[in-house]
Image (cartoon, rainbow, N blue to C red):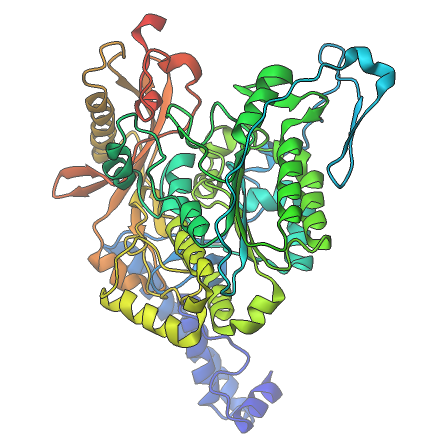
Length: 620
């Protein structure tokens, strides 16, 4: 050790062999190093006073630590080092989570395969479709064939824009967090990251509770309240035909557009909503899928038919995606596709579609369909219900959905600044609003030229351009960005320190819990078929402070918030809410989340939002 110290002095190191970190332990070790450096170690007589000196230093530092813990009046903080953060920026720190932490291992398992071929629903294999879309019928089973058709005509696409264009393909898998995607779909993950070199946005934070809220932000750039006040109010029937969804913008530039989901009756725009009067895109999968579900759908679980005929229903959607992308690989297109059936209610079911999801990506890549296509693999949120949701890890994962972005290699070479910014932003706080702005940039690639990007960024910073909720991922996301700056309600913000509170001894916890229950009952005023809820039990509570790499500033300026999880009666509904508490005045900082399934408990009302809270009096 002595030789190492002497060598370090010769090469000019200030603190040899000891890393500099801002914590008490390293501060203490630095003191010892300074003491050692100040002594002549060649003299053996100095070892005695050196030992005494070091001992005194240890004792003094020990009492300093003890006095800090005894008299420090600030709120305690978790002992988390910088290496324990997924995002560690001035405006936001998101805790690092392990894929297989001990708290969630018991919820992860390999599910049994789903058998779509059984005696009750078997469909004879009498039809064969070739790669060029020719259909052959096995006439040996002609008695089983019933032919019918319906004529339709598609409006010819608008003239193609001769400016440089790139196609956009968005593939959505419902209710998959970033980490659960890695756990359940390793084959797809490895292909995305190792073969396609797609970029994972590890700080992608949801902005609302449910699918509609988070997908409408991608497709429209608006919050639910904003879209309710604009295009839905303009429609007497409250349909979405007049809403400026992003595929309309691409269609106006000559893009061929497509939209499809694998659940027709509970789709993004149709679950307790009225959807579209006219097909929203050039190619609309919904009518075909609805017939599949109604005519040959089976194996229903929690309201979703998982099979059509002899196959998983999702395989039909994937075949449609593949055909669409390959057919139009030489023309600009915008495709938005969403799958719910195999991921919405089951944490481990995505494992069953890993192979077919991998095969879809492989077929698209090897066919050349991605040579001029920007690919986005996204989700809306993590698992909102079930055992994992009751853990701290599940709490955070639910707020951090997956987002992967692939662009062709020519794009990365031609727009190096934009691509470099996107790579930097993989470790920044990002949102569905940002993804919307990113898609708009892809519609007009001129915006990605260096000078245009500088002007756009200047306008964003100085508010001289039209304001929006998001910032394109091709622009540099500021290190100082907070959830408030990113338009993320604090209830869904993962840039927070959560300190557990005693639910039995803290008076403020019970006050907050009662406030949340009163807020639920206030929402249900006028709905006489719904029972008045009462507080049954407080499950957990925490005090929350916004966390960034400069926590000293945040802790001084931030009003503490609280998150409480509780159970109500009747119905044993589990709810979670975040509340700010300023001078005894409580205020919700986001929606009140339902964290267990309500199923038929709210069948007496049809309101999209209130179904989460209503317990029908007719049930008991």
